[in-house]
Structure formats: C-alpha cells, structure tokens
Image (cartoon, rainbow, N blue to C red; front, side, top):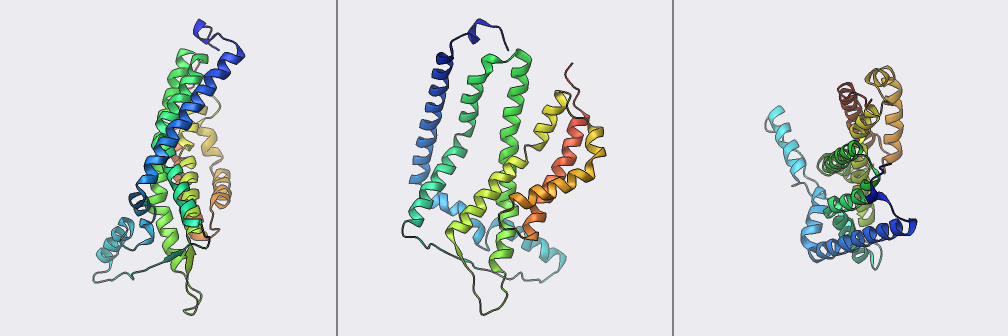
Length: 264
C-alpha cells in the first residue's frame, strides 16, 4: 500500500468517501436513465431493431448470399412480440431506460471507482489499473456490440422463426426477447474481458503463453461449459455462436501473454 500522506485517514473517513462516490454514481445513473426514458421511441427502435428483417445484419447476410448464389431471394420474416402483463410494457420501459443509463455513464462510474481506490496504489500499480480500466471498458463495449449485431440477431431469427408445424405459430413475449438480449449482451461483454485478465495475470507472473498452449484442449472444454451456462436459450446454435468468440479470445489471450513481460 502507498505510504503517501494522502492515503491516511480513519475508517470512517474512507467510508464517507465511498458513500460520496456511490451517491454521485447513483445520481449520474438516475439522470441518464431519466433522459433515456424520455426518448422512448429512439430507445426501443434500437432495442427492437433485430426483430425486423431490415436489420443491418440481415441485409448484409442477404447481400453475401446473393453474391454466392445469384438471384437468390432470402425469405423475409416477421416475429410478433406480445406483452402478457398489465404493467409489462411500462416496467420494461423503465428497465431498459436504467440499463441504457448505466451504459451511458459507465465511464464516469469507472472513474469514480478508480478515484476511490487509486490513493492506496503505488505509482506503477496506478498505471496498470488505468490500462485495465480503459481497455476493460473498450472490450466490454466490443462484446456488447458483437452480441447486438451478430449473436443475438442470428439466434433470434433462427429460434423466432423455427416451427415444428405450420399449425403452430410463434408469439414471443417481450420479456423473453428483452431478457435474452440483455443477458447475451452482458455476458459477451464479460467474456471479452478475457484478454485483459490474461494480460494482468501475465504481468503479475501468474500466467504464461506456454501454459495456455499446453492446456488449450482443456480450456476448450471449459469454454464450452461456460458457453452452455451463460446461453439463456439452451440451443446448439446460440451455444456455438457464443463459444466461437470465446475460443478466438483465448487464442488472442495467448498472443497477448506471449508479448507481456512479467513485472519483476
């Protein structure tokens, strides 16, 4: 722990500082959530976009299919979402607004948390912490974007249009749609922290590239198990869509570790 005089203080003083940080975070999230709540049409246009066949991912895949098979016309699809609770749509509006507000002020949240813990760190530890926080946020957003633009749309299109018989139609609940979207997006954001954790463990001397290569097969099994656990729909298609980026991130982690010297 740093011996600088700025780090000195009683337990109650530190507790008061933590309370102040939490209070500022709550206020920031509340304000951002209120702003998001007021822009309902824009907010839900983005949230519900993957359920339409005009979504950018479907259009790009359609163009690729037409390049491979000229004159091929991909089938259009339409999935109806329903709400089965009296206050369901209002409560979902509030929930999505809070989630959007947290995403909007996430950099500020990280700044407040870092400002609280930084006085207890050495100078080189602060540099490492700054890199971890900055790149961790970037990788989380990258995982969230991958889920929104690729994993969730493909999962939703496959499962939302799948029918065992033409006599059975699909009516997906709004709760099911939103829960799957948020869960996949959040979990992919967490999964994308893998290279950052690999770098940190390598820097601390706990992890080597040779170790990761030696246990690659074991890691693949573990990644498949994790993908099965975090996949909310429990289908093979989503499992593979989640597991493939996780494996690629593991390989990226090996490259990162191989180029990271341990701190002496």
